Image 1 (tube, rainbow, N blue to C red):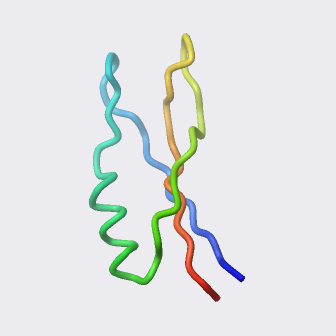
Image 2 (tube, helix red, strand yellow):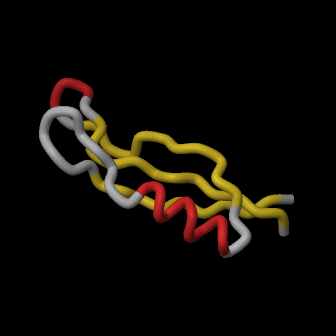
Length: 61
């Protein structure tokens, strides 16, 4: 069985949005025993732009 953790990141910039801190978050959770499992959009903005994402982490219970 696995447990999951979701970390929300907000996009920065207007055109070509970037999710700053994503690599640091993945490294931080990996050091804590979590495995990066993927990401999913959390909020959408105008014209389908992604405003926020959730990084998904898992670890065996």
